[in-house]
Length: 390
Ligand SMILES: *Cc1c(COP(=O)(O)O)cnc(C)c1O
Image (cartoon, rainbow, N blue to C red; front, top):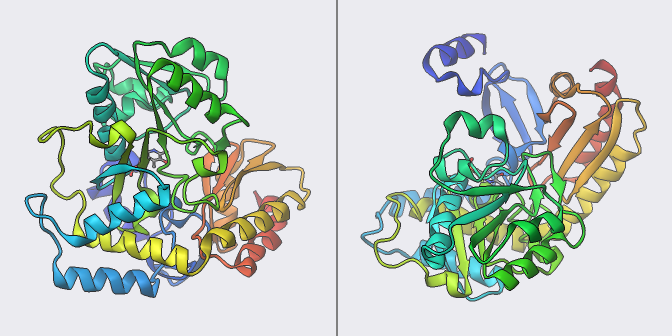
């Protein structure tokens, strides 16, 4: 492992730092490093590996598709793409249309262009939230409300106005008839797994209706079953105009989607946007397998059930370093009383659990949706000792 880390450091750009573990393989919710150590994967490639590792449905769908037809470009249509779009629209229970991408940031780039196209030149700015995260490419980065990652790369040639997440009053002040769109996460993921306060998304919907701005919900981390619903906005009964998806959608294969509803379904004109790989047959086959499996295995209820047990188990641990737990479904933040998340992450790893130090005082858990109650319970059992060593 140390040799691979040295080669990584020499050959890979330094933007990630050198990760502490080199993974070799995975099965279910378990992964093994290159030295043969096993870990319970409680981060799932950042809310991506929805079906865990090596799920037979995903393996079969991808293997079959790659052997049949791996790529077409968008000069040719193919069935997996159409089927996946139809499937997503059915799950959203809405009239709409889909543009497929290869990642989350590209889904938000598409959404940004879409709302500008629909708004025309009169609506000159968009609104997004402080501490929001929408991606690393220039458009999505302009929407990202974390100054430390945005500002070194500005200016962006985009008028983005930031509001405090959760304040309906600030949103009402910020959104006028000149605003093209409001970009929000239903729960701020990278911002610390911070759910929108009760009624905030409904207020955002109302403000957008009154001003004619588009409500864009970035469900890239919250979507595809993560919170126990297909999409988090379904818990709130709020219907967005545009939804962006990625992460869990492909179960580990790179795919994202920008879904436009109502008038946003057909706001792009021919030639307005494109992607060589977007809607790639293999990625679409993977996504179809993910959606099928979530449905067939009843994973939405499972996520709710195991997620609640996990959260109540953690909350009951009662350790001075533990300040609380927040989030929904299998998407939880363990909030620490001191900025010791890096030490907790390392102690968890030594104990055989992969978790993510999201912020100095926040540990993120986003395990595969198939994690069993016993697996989740094994982490709760180990937690006091982990906190004790951190
Ligand atoms: C991860 C994430 C993105 C960016 O997705 P990439 O695939 O890394 O480009 C955008 N928005 C949210 C809410 C995310 O969690």
